[in-house]
Image (tube, rainbow, N blue to C red):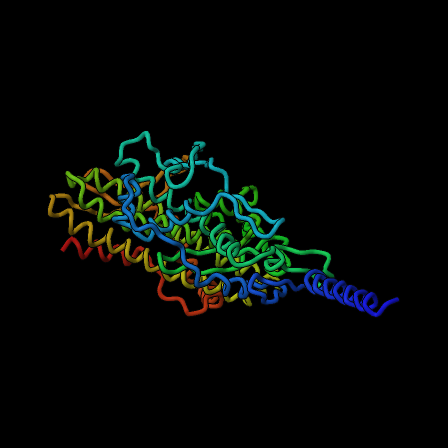
Length: 444
């Protein structure tokens, strides 16, 4: 054998060995390599957040021609950019060669609950924000749909946007995977993206019933801790163990997603106050539409906050491993703290508008607002509740839902749970007593 042939064989062997070691390091040791050559280890949420936390969405500066979009941009710009960014997410997100995610179906369901507690479901077609707008109605009626539309768009953004940003940063789904200690099981680690405003989005790992690193239990288990008198009409949708809501699969992650989505429902309604001031005539009917939106949504703050803290209490008592996992999850605790502060502050601002700003505005048009006890009927049952009244017309404030939930959250047990889960101590919770003081002062 010649020396040249022998050297060629040695080079070939060394080359094969090098290739073998490369692939072994990638697929047998849990490491991979990003496009920039940096090694990848078993994923964790903090690692994934660092990859995308400074990524920005390219917002289009031009004013939209569609009147609903134009109104949203003018009066609630942060909600506008939330909805726009959601619509501009690609229908299909692909990472590597084997992982593909597709946006949710273009069909949707509108669920409305009447004053009698009965629900009606309507199948909706189309896509994006306008899917949730009843375009066959008058423009004024379409405006009342915007808060629901933004709520639903926020769900899509929460579930999809982080994955889209990661698809621009990672080469393989292995960079997003968590492996069991014996290497026989792996799970994709998803991030929820909680949109706060145009310049701020925060992230937290999405929990599920079977996830190795971020486990959860279904919201239905909370039933044993929630007495009948604290079960509002939304309880059946989100907590009842017979429901098919995502809260039964993702637990506290699903509840936090809803908490932020209802924040955006209320934020849009709050912002549109300025739009309603431009409508002529300034009549009781005009403002009954706005106050109806406020009164139908504001108490979601109390519902979801109470349910989230009940989840913490249940976990501490019955699911100690999941409780420990949640308390170690500073990303989720930070998300709750920030959203909680914003939503609590927003409810206070809504009370200020209902109790002071609106009465002071409408007295200029000869319209007087009063608040008193009245009867609200739901599911055939009559219940005493505060009613917000314009002359002879009044609306229920659902105080029979709101006040007991706030009272429960002010107990030592729930206060401790809130302060334990939050990263900073909670402030005073907005009660209807503060609102009533504003109403009384507006009469002077």
